[in-house]
Amino acid sequence: MLSSVTLREVADEAGVHYSTASRALNPATRSIVNAKTAKKVLAAAERLGYRPHPLARGLRTNRTLTIGMAVPDLLNPVFPQLYAGAEASLRDQGYWLLVGAGDDCGTPKSASRILIDQHVDGLIVANAHIHSTLPQNPTNQTAPTVLVNRTTDTIDAPSVACDDHAGIGLVVRHLVELGHTDIAHIAGPQFISNGVIRRQAFVAWMHSSGLETPPELIVETDGFHIDEGRRACERLLDSGARFTAIVGANDLMALGCYDVLAERGIRVPHDVSVTGFDDMAYIDRVHPAMTTVSVPFYEMGALAGEVMLTLLTSEDSGAGTLPTSTRLRPHLEVRDSTAPPAVS
Image 1: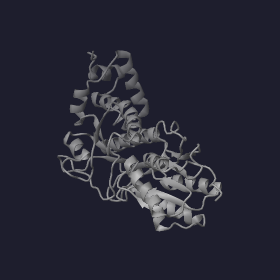
Image 2 (image 1 turned 120 degrees about the horizontal axis):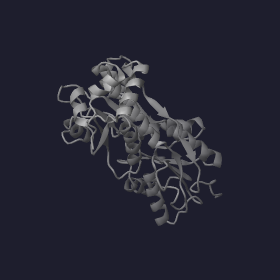
Image 3 (image 1 turned 135 degrees about the horizontal axis):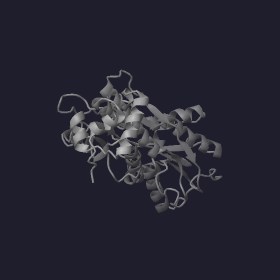
Image 4 (image 1 turned 90 degrees about the vertical axis):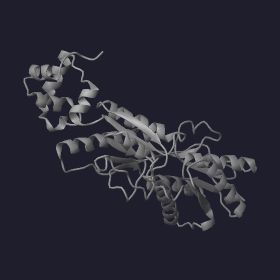
């Protein structure tokens, strides 16, 4: 049941102007109110049992109190983690997070376009192609936008992502320390920033280790999916190239390698070591348990939500300082899918 206590009653209780109470009770504008005053207003609201009516609040602020989150699909288990983190941050401040899945290249049916048409107050974009652009809202302005788990040079927006370069370095160093020198890479799509950065990082870390990267040992894919991992692994094996380890650009593609290697009687890790990237749920339960780069997706989503709130606050207050991009450090989970190369 909604509270019958009015905002004006809260303002009177706190001894402040109605507009001051309104700003203090709105998470998006609270920072522009004197901290002592805001604390007094919040205490008054708590004493009176005041609960703002969401619709009325939205009308006063010209906002829907919703944020859109565009993701490539809902089948990849990393995206629910991103959503959960962002939703927790935004819910605490009175915002609802709406999710849309689908292509995000500015097409009429893209997730971001549909979310903008729903008049969301901002966009958290998890599926930005390198050359994607964002649709404009009905006032011909680009909605406040935060990129998460993605980067792109074509969208002028803060991003929260994993340090993919460092993550690939953890894997390559681990394999080199085990004695591997012939290492293959199943690369992600080269139209997605993660795929590009992880491929470039693989080449850089191999070279810094004094190792070659023959073209036949790097296979690019069209998606971060198990089937693409299978196709790439088959291509590696059919090429006849020698390798003793495979660095997968994500866990799903590494699982595709598991399938193909098992079908051909190649043992992991006795014959070929395999690594993933993401440390998605239950990847430690497969056989053998997968060595992978662990990415803090929940924390990444939560931080993206906090950055969005900062953008909205800056928009309300007219502040000129905007959030900058952040890279979270991953760590390596060493499990049973990696071992020293077999002696030939």
